[in-house]
Image (cartoon, rainbow, N blue to C red):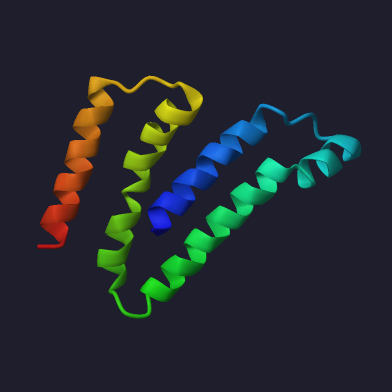
Length: 106
């Protein structure tokens, strides 16, 4: 659940970046009140809170390996929601990540 929430937040951060202005006060205030950014922060924060509670019962070495799933989810979400291309190299990398998770958790 946490990797999906954090990955969703990343996609919303990317969408927010397209509407981000400069570093002047007016643009920063506009950014701080951007609904897409606020939702992204909420999802990312919720994912982080869930991770903290998972760490109460699971060793860090195991729990953190699941966070590697964000490297699988973000490109898939980017393809679906942003129209970005998925490549054979991505697929090979995702297979290696999932294989590594299976190896670590076996």
